[in-house]
Length: 305
Image (cartoon, rainbow, N blue to C red):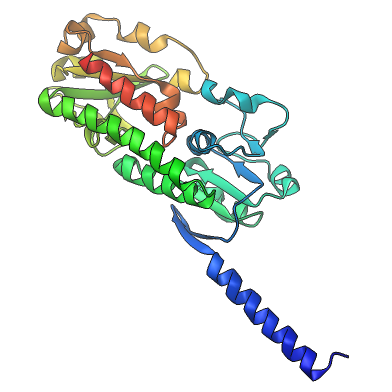
């Protein structure tokens, strides 16, 4: 049985250990709560393409990722050494548990699974606020850069993108253009304004909103259902088209066929060659990534080139 003196020493050592851990651990605010990190995570699982895009450029390689619909710029993760976790909406819990991760980075499509994922390992929820894209993206980049002890690299990446955003905003201020952002999805067309998943077009990039006055739109949960008559009446200076069918691997090129009509061709966007078929992967599947954010800016710059 330990002596009284030994018990005292053990108790003192325990207090010192607790105090040391408390001093090292840091709390980070993410999209659905907080996470405490006391060491650089070594076994990381990433469950979304925006966060994967960023940590990849940061120089961090996860042990597992969802491989379905994997973007071309992240094609290296198709290799067998990276475990497949499932899809962007669903994860194989048994696989996650077996891998014994230090950290799971999840995204908005898995927000409903947050508590279940937390039962396996600490979760950082990387959810981009579409109504405040750049501020929330910077927040996550700063957090992950610090978590992985890559602060300087993170600052460099943020600075690179900020410079491009400033250049784009300078052009939109000097030459104001009315933009309409639409999504083609299974034959339907929906329009998105400044308070939507495409808010970056209007807030950070500084484009003006283009709306129809004489043709009505039907309000939907994900955008407003519109017609080609609506587009023709709105007369946008810039028309940004996202082909969702292409983004989810359903079909390629259908949007361009649909938009090749007299109504669209009557718009200033068509006449001045300012119709851009924006990158569906960057805008729809991997928003909040470093590569994808650069692609988004490049897409919008086409209006001025």
